[in-house]
Image (cartoon, rainbow, N blue to C red; front, side):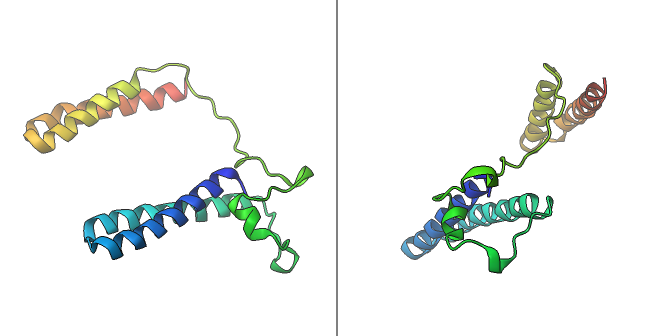
Length: 144
């Protein structure tokens, strides 16, 4: 299992444990819900990573042939030796532009849209225009 998936698995175990302790010590709903949602998000990423690594490559090991230390290997305590080590998610490199102004324009558009929630809808007009321009510029830059 890739290190990224093990990271989210450890995060999920820790966060769900802390959520349980926090609930029984404070009985506070908002904080417990926030911690629970963080733990469930980590569980979601573990599930997505498991599907990406094991099912996308069609390299699924049947339950009866799994090694005895599968739990230790899953948590990252026991690494397999030799050629059985899988690279982390093994994704192909994508072409990324070296520099761009469009993330900055997008950030300004998001700032104007967010401030429009506080100060009024008159800020949404420039925010929407900048967001559309930034989206157009970002997409057309990817295909240049």
